[in-house]
Length: 466
Image (cartoon, rainbow, N blue to C red; front, top):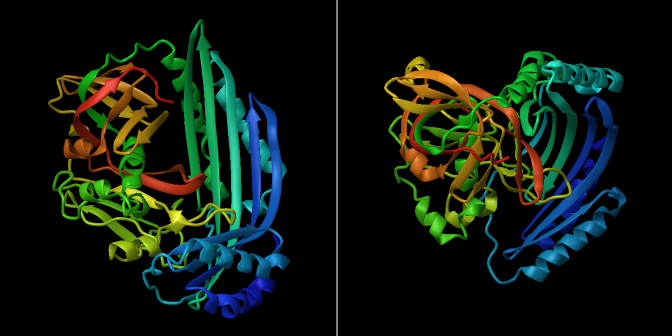
């Protein structure tokens, strides 16, 4: 991988030389080494290794931002000039407002206890993909097509600011995605599985059971009856809980969604009750080892753990330095960019619901007719409204899980759904498969998790929201 060390002096000299021409100046250089492998129906579609080197400059002047990205580092001074000029062109109509943070000088390399993928040959990674493709294809005779995607990326970033911050941070992210499509007559069904890690390569070596299960789910769904659309009491597993808390609630907690939206701010009022007393929701990059974990965000703010809901009441939201200043709150270390091509946005990191006290085995007790939904197949959100499709589901009859059904979508309003949580299970599971999209920056690594939940009066339909 190309080194950034030689450019450190140029960064510090650049912010020192140009910093007094603007209210705030940040230069972020990045180098990355990555592998991409895609197999479509056991044939190679993509097989590549890449090294990239680039940077970005952000300038802030009287309420206006200027941004420049580049991949020729000898142009650094010209890009600084360009970003400052852009900031002065759009700024000048308001005072600059960034919540203060202490300057930091630090070097961080996030550990890889499960092995560095850069030490694994492309041939060996390809062999792993081939093996999983074979398992998917052999899972059932009705499988007609499969997809296996492998990616790893090691990023090193060097951030220098006009306030004296200088942070050198390195991390590695890995992900594998699997999909199998089964056909019988006119019927077509798909099973999916995704796994990710910031712990290392060996986390991707023991996925046989999950891969085979994805193929079998696709084939088994061909003969399952569709669920009858209605309102049901629903029990969801931890994977769906993680998807729900990230997609339906987490995005509404990102302060850039709210600080210029009075209606949303009124809804997301601190102290307002959204759920039962035992509901606690958090987001934070500080817990180590997860997909959304790091030590500093892309503004140099230290990672935190932020309580969003405590005892059912809203108590916090996620911030960059700018949104924190506008709302008179504290930066939370949630300003993130996908890579040097993009400016940081307020983004989730690891988002979760705390485990509860209800034994999982009793979550179905007393439900005369309901639905148990697990895993996820797809979904979408629109503001406070959501629709998710379960990867697999069963009817609940007289307190017991009964026959499996397909095409189970769960729809509703996130605030009404939080208010109708009846029980929170005593289990907990992290889902490290997340790749979040926002503002054109798609695939940003995140983690999410939670316990099983029992929720009453959920709209369940049979139309697939993929």
